[in-house]
Amino acid sequence: MSAAEHGGSLDPGTEAGRTALKALLLEPSTALTGFDFDGTLAPIVSDPRDSAPQPGVVEALVALSARVGTVAVITGRPAATAVRLGGLDRIPGVVVLGHYGAERWVDGRVVAADPPPGVALVRSELPALVDAAGAPTGTWIEDKGRSLAVHTRRAEDPDRALELLAGPLAELAERADLKLEPGRMVIELRPRGVDKGAALTSLVRERAARSVLYAGDDLGDLPAFAAVHDLRARGVLGLTVCSSSEEVTQVAEAADLVVSGPAGLTAFLYELTTRIRGPVE
Image 1 (cartoon, rainbow, N blue to C red):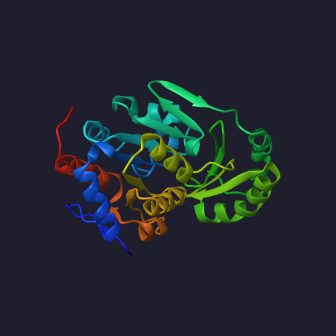
Image 2: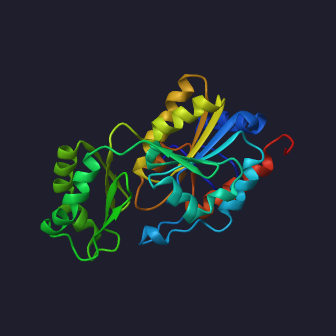
Image 3: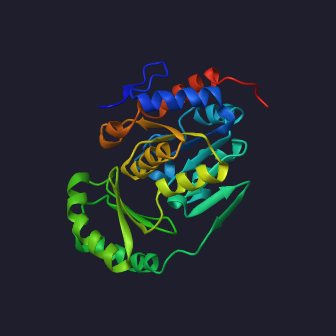
């Protein structure tokens, strides 16, 4: 593992991470901080409709928003859903990019283009496909509007359910010209051409950020980590933070700093805010 485990101090395990953290602390007004929602700001739960933010994390982001240039949440969920479940509208000036950047919530409004026709195809065929695959009881479909996800966390045998569904879902995604996105006990079919990396890069450019921090926990966050690496080559200092779990290890291996799930991230954010130099406006 290339990153240091967060144990009560800001201690990235990479030189690039340490350099980016120093820049953020010295010039917070030019920093952009971005966060995934599920597994990062909110603990993973068996039913994503019951998701709620980690106690204290929204308050930590409110405090952080008074000191940094931008606070953003980049999620695979619909933007309005993340705002509602997380109470994210309490964070002054927050930008919420939903559906991996296809939607944007800011100041109470959601802006988004129409979803591609493949989403309607998947919506019509997915229930029968899940039944035909013999997925165990408890496997269920979440319709996100612009994408659809098949969850196995509540199934009798979650891993077996994923194995049974992987092939048929890949074939359906191909016919619908959608991207297949695996995650923590979930497989999502979503439009191509959007991901958290592209969303993060676009927002960094828009805000003319000179440093960027991104925190995530799942495979869908790896494009954002890759974007941070690419931005470094363009002169934007970057720090990647993993909200760790036993289910996904690749994200921790790619991060500059690892924290212990949403609770560890909350503690990290409070510590980060107290160390940022400069007056609160």
